[in-house]
Length: 228
Ligand code: MN
View 1 (tube, rainbow, N blue to C red):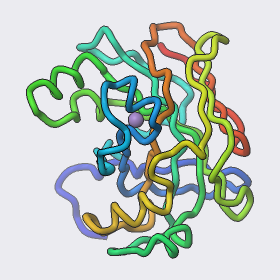
View 2: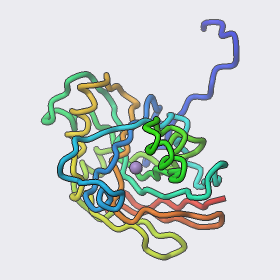
View 3: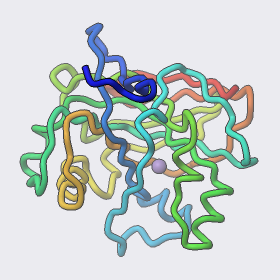
């Protein structure tokens, strides 16, 4: 063991359905505006834009089931997204080979300080302050693809206090999971442990302390997160 000069950070890992073993997280990539109706609600033309990505920090992933309302915002939005977790990676991965790198899938929330993100967009500045804050990605366990297959369609919904807010289908993704992996791998070296949030359908909106969010994706069960 090397002698570290300060305490080493805790490793970030997600539970896996069906085993006590954990999925170690290396990086977190998130795609923007990947469902046409959401792109339109954010004021963009879904047809004419290539994909773009931003990153969250690995330790922003939080399987605890609680989401502490973050400071410096009065407009924190839910974005319900399926994630893909990679078991291997590389550069310049072909679309046809991309799914060979996927270990499994799960449910996540790309929680967003929308007011701060909007301010950063206006100034042409990076989005981290709106996107990559503490515990900004509540998530569920990884479902191995060996058990659930590779999901290309199926409903994705989010309720807040029992009221349906987001409703979409995985088949509405503009860029499919294999295309996202191929595209990202042209610009970054992907590797085992990388997690990709695949975008949110229309219906994003604010939450308040005390709200209970329930996300469901057909084939991946549900994720319940309370805003505290
Ligand atoms: Mn998102």
